[in-house]
Amino acid sequence: MGIRRRSEGVGGAVSGGVGPETVDVQALPSLLEYLTSVLFEDGSERETSTLLVFTEDGRWKVALNDRQEGRSLWVSGSSFFGALLALEEQLCTGEGDWRVNRARKK
Image (cartoon, rainbow, N blue to C red):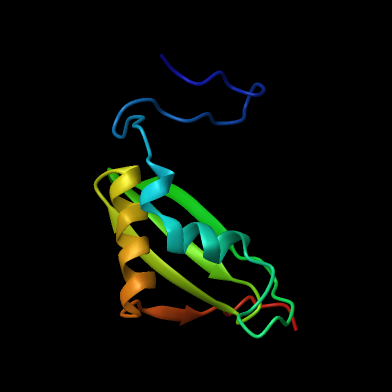
């Protein structure tokens, strides 16, 4: 099954390569907190983060974007859930490679 093109002349997604799978969100408590928490531990307000997800060369790639700090944590995996689990592990261990967002709004 493929994706329907939106209009003539506009490219659509190619089916195949990476498939759907079940994601157990209960296995991702740190990621969910990072995405949804509107307060820091001290009670001050916090801007929520975003998650970018895409596939490239048969791999799932995800970036957790900390909008307030202007940095992103990137990981990849052979499956969608695997990439999310890798992100969860890096959040828990603090060993992630955070990159500065060059396009950060000033």
